[in-house]
Image (cartoon, rainbow, N blue to C red; front, side, top):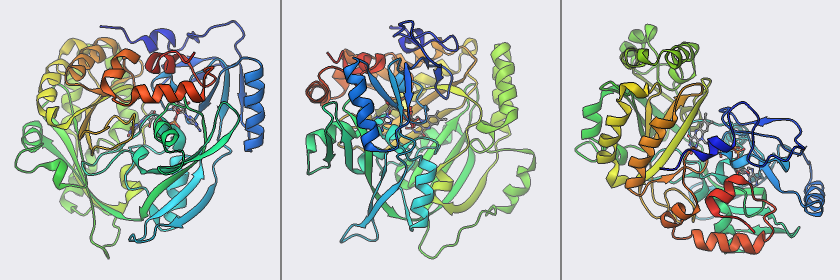
Length: 476
Ligand SMILES: Cc1cc2nc3c(=O)[nH]c(=O)nc-3n(C[C@H](O)[C@H](O)[C@H](O)COP(=O)(O)OP(=O)(O)OC[C@H]3O[C@@H](n4cnc5c(N)ncnc54)[C@H](O)[C@@H]3O)c2cc1C
């Protein structure tokens, strides 16, 4: 199997880069700290005109350009040693247009650099919300779309399938409006594109009326979760948003059921289950506390140094999990803090393959020598028609594997990856994997069309980097 080349090229912490040319400026590092690059220059334009000047100058000097959002990808998606562009100043709400014939849905156009937490606030102020979200809100909207970011919900799609329009600056210097009906091929290519088609200036999203979620989180035996994956309870189909975390080396999971409430229900951040609230005083929840707290940081750094301590630590962590139940605005339920830094790989596999794949994968994750410290996250998504969506034309389940940022992860990720690949798994574009263009070509029926459009609109590879060359092939 190929090694994790992205790691080899963009080495943690030492500033090495695939595109070393001896004229580096400041070092840029992604959130996880596993990708480092040295952009030649960093530009933060405030207007499309200023951005066009940056593009003209870069092209004249034969430089490549790459937009960085929040730098939350684990792959070198945003890394460059050419011109790094931040669109943080493109963060305004442009318009809200009600969609006729719907029950309060609207098309919301925002600047591409807006962070999801700002977008969520702006939407809430206007009585709107995103239909589904992932588990953090630090990303820029264009960055989240660029890698196919998703949440969980067997009847719901990832964010890119909610896009209804994109304004794009092409390598030619033209700014084009795209939508499913206008420049539709370009639109389809740009929905998930790693920035390889052009620079996204603004995005129009389909948003829904703001809604509350009834959140129920409960420790549950692994056997019970597996039985109900497609069995009697069919947790994924009978809940709006279902996911679970499993602790390697244990029989413990934390299952999360989030469901829309009946109209008229009030929010209640008080725990709806007082007995659980009482029991909770010495316990914690996996998302809001375990994955974000100092204790977890400490246990991870201990097990990174002494891997043999990982299994007993996992047993204690899984036993200390607590139930809770509350009602809150959707974005507050979806989003959790992530203060403990980690590296991550996530594959989308055909949903029907989930149970068998998980069982095979569990024998790997349970291996004591791999010292897996982080719980495994399992989520769901409906099929969509976005060309490079990981759920393209198939109902999908996602298996995410993490390891503390200072720990050994390669052997674990490689073993897991070969299991996910065997069932036609597609890697998250923003999370670690070893696949190359020739592998991905077999997984995405539209990848050929995507790369032809890319060659047409960016013939000189102005928007390419090491990673886009790896996954889409060389641009020129
Ligand atoms: C703690 C954590 C939790 C996460 N949770 C989830 C989750 O729940 N679900 C999930 O699916 N993913 C998740 N991710 C992955 C994350 O959503 C993606 O990696 C996302 O792309 C990061 O957004 P960003 O703004 O940081 O983009 P960056 O990583 O900065 O960039 C991503 C890509 O988008 C391109 N890009 C950015 N802006 C533009 C633009 N204006 N025009 C053209 N191209 C552009 C970049 O060039 C790059 O190729 C998580 C990541 C972390 C670190």
